[in-house]
Image (cartoon, rainbow, N blue to C red):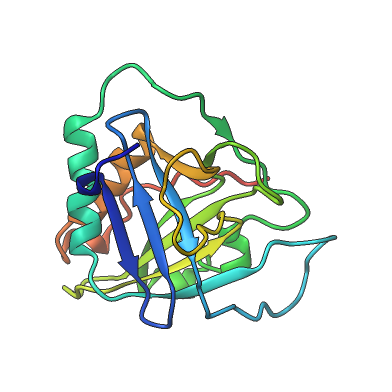
Length: 197
């Protein structure tokens, strides 16, 4: 069980929050709690049953940057939990669903996309994907996000042995670099690790 020091609650401006936790092991567990802004995807090109897509704004990315840096500083080299790469089922990857790879979008925003995320434990529709965005060349504290397929952390539950999406140590290194980049550096992509499927 992670100590409170290794749990972070990230409020979302539009309502809801992300809950992140690590136990000095092989990844950062990620849950959502009560996200309210569901993105209406147009045009609808979904095949079968798709996980809902949520979007919004994280008002202050500094605590998240510090949390990821703390994980990387203290994580052990040997993985302590088995990670399974999630599957994108019955829908397009999040980059395509958000049109974030379009030139008109990349002119204004820099993205860090994790698609699919690794997972621990099963849950219905486990196809976890997360995409974070920053305004290019502007030193703002906030950042945007899109999320789909992440497990919901029930109210009052503690992040213990519950199924979770996981940011692996390798992806956490990429994320830390992107979060700590200055506004000028964000003018250049620091790499994306999404997979087209």
